[in-house]
Image 1 (tube, rainbow, N blue to C red):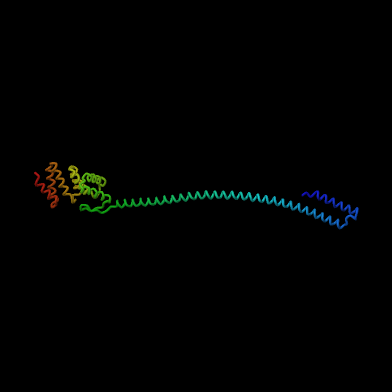
Image 2: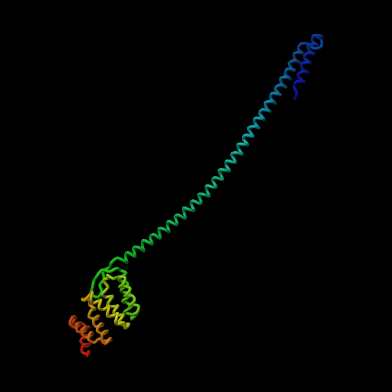
Length: 270
């Protein structure tokens, strides 16, 4: 609404009324003029108020619009922040899942490593136990021997008793080469000589029997070893050497079964 033209016209009317009042008092009396002026003033004030109210509403609308835009911008920023936070949370969740998976794998690896270590420790303890010396008694002799030595000696002796002389010969040769200081040495030489003699290798048998007698002259199988030496000598037509061996056997180990057999053989040697 445009107020300026209306106000101009209203003022003009007032002046006309006043002029008319001056010119002719009969047209309008003072009371009516005052009422007209007051009414005009009220209308003018009302129009001013309407204009002010409209201006206030416009300013208020502008402020509301600004506030609304600011709130909208802030909401948009908040949504972006929330979205970024959600993305960060998702990334963190994925990384945490990976870490948890890695931890679980590490726990499994550690458990497997501990199990293997226990197995290694158990195997090591078992090897130590097998290597620990044990007291053994063989052919009337008691001594300390490694568990491995005992098992190997017993296995080779079992081959002799099964008449597997080739395997027994190979086994006892390896055993003596690996264990030159073993307490089984004299007995191993005796049974090695027996296996060789049974395989008709008298030359090797005699060498091993003589080695046995040299290191253990008191061994319980010395008389038998001397008797087999004499047999080898007789088979080789070494009768003089055989007689000497048999006579030594009878004189050194009288009363033994080997000495009795030696006397029989002496009676038949020419």
